[in-house]
Amino acid sequence: MKGEYENMKKLADLLEKLEYQCLQGTMDKEITNITFDSRKAEKGCLFFCIKGAVSDGHAYAKDVAEKGAAVLIVQDKVEVPEEVTVIQVENSRYAMACISAAWFGHPAEKLKTIGITGTKGKTTTTYLVKSILENAGHKTGLIGTIETIIGEKKIPSANTTPESYLVQKYFAEMVEAGCDSVVMEVSSQGLMLHRTAGFQFDIGIFTNIEPDHIGPNEHKDFADYLHCKALLFKQCKVGIFNADADHLDEILEGHTCQVETFGFSEKADLRAENTKLVTGKGTLGIAYDVKGLMNFPVEIDLPGAFSVYNSLTAIAVCRHFGVTPENIQKALKQAKVKGRIEMVKVSDEFTLMIDYAHNAMSLESLLTTLKEYKPNRLVCLFGCGGNRSKLRRYEMGEVSGKLADLTIITSDNPRDEEPQEIIDDIKIGIGKTNGKYVEIIDRKEAIAYAIHHGQPGDIVVLAGKGHEDYQEIKGKKYPMDERVLIQEILEEDKQNK
Image (cartoon, rainbow, N blue to C red; front, side, top):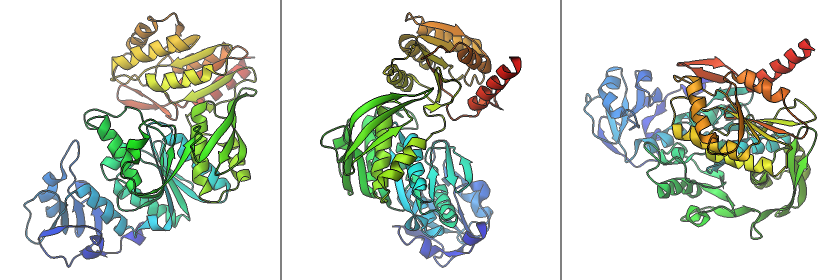
């Protein structure tokens, strides 16, 4: 894999799509590698001086020059020996995206690229799109919050949207693995930091927007958050928008793409009508009719109105690939997203699911949706992370106390705090309601309690861990996957019979 990109590239070729000024040195250079990590600087490389939240790459200019870097890409002036070429650009992050695309041979041009932005629904929708496209015979890569998937290879994610160098590297690996398309989550942070610059998306999607990610090192206010989300629609050929979303006009402002809409609204190009809740043995789902640009019925084993939005978005995308209604129906029926309302079969009598809801807003949305299925009891098991805001604990306690018939309070990632102290904080929130609760510190014991006390018609939610397969205690990560715990509990039950 590496060999293909280790051939030298001419500096002028890497800069072809950029406006720049050469402050010193010669343009006649062959580049051996490109990097933004000073530890990886080597003889003949091009180094990006990136201004980050924690450190400023300009501070490492002398250091990388000593290691033999041939070219520095800078925003500010730096002092380095005269044989080092210094190229000044307006924004070194934007330059990194364009140069990375050129370095890897513009791989996005060999793929159909789909970018999904919005406050909620990005993760689920990317997996639904991948599922439908693969069912129809496409080979689709994925870049998202949980992982990057290239063929059989899965790489755990550090950010929702990786740095531009990695985005381009992954695209190049996808092309090499025979992928014809890629679906990726595009965060507002990623857009703000030009991580997806340097190419044009074939399809951009807007799911919804709510005040989120506002604060230090994120967005200064909601207007900035909106502005960053909207950037995607100046960088895609077709934009597919949720017609029912708040602030849609602001997101559309200045767009340069062809516009399509989806939703429940009569004005939407692709609509959901005749929505019906579906309950099976240990499963919950939703059925509806797709109308407008396509017409056919759909049934999915994912509950709630947000599942209609997520699946409708995926259908809108797959229409552009010419996927047949039959293929869409089949793929949606089988689609599962790890840790997002993921149902795990433990009984025909009641439903158990795992979900990533780890703040009050997402927990309230989930529990409200599940109450629509009129369960015998709604049981919510969760904990809260240590070294995080106490407010989150009070709020989640209050939401669960108000909406669930029984709350099982347990541990999440206690980190450096004592699990009992976190539980005591959650109880302050529950104390504001009449909600019943039990507290069981050990998460496996708590899950066993939920399974052993499940009653016919119950819906049991294990909230907060979702796709995570570890528990963080005192600075160490221990393996802990709720799916494995459930299987262990069921096996132990069999042996004890």
